Amino acid sequence: MPKRSDGKWVTISEAAEFIGITPQSVRSTYLPFLSDDAVDRAKSPMQVLSGALIELLVRKRADEAKAPESAGEAGKSSNSDEDRYRRAKADLAELELARKMEHLIDRESCRRVLGEWAILIRQMGEVLGKQHGAAASQTVEDTLTECGRVTGELLSASSDEASR
Image (cartoon, rainbow, N blue to C red):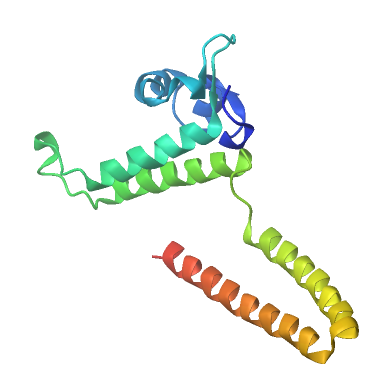
């Protein structure tokens, strides 16, 4: 059996609903490309690991973006409003599936957890300061300040990328 960290087991119908396509499309388009340990055919109904399915969706989407237009579509603009809308809708469905399968957390939850960690580490710095002097406490505080700066830059950079 695959590791639990590979996601939750979901039925083909559940996966299709999250992605926004039919169960038959999941079976014909994605199922053949999933590894055997990511599909539980013994269950009724058949189940797949959500993490493996998400990875496959992302990989296929990246491949589609890199692939040249087919001969039948050569005359169409790949930047048409309809195509962009379809791709955006599919991307949102993939993100929603990842969020529901608990592969993503929202920024506010992340900030809250990091803030709680900072409080705990500051308390540890105070204890170290009492045991080893002010320099130990200041080192912890400087490290927290630097961690906050790097985290802020990372979140800001990912926000900039998302808005493109």
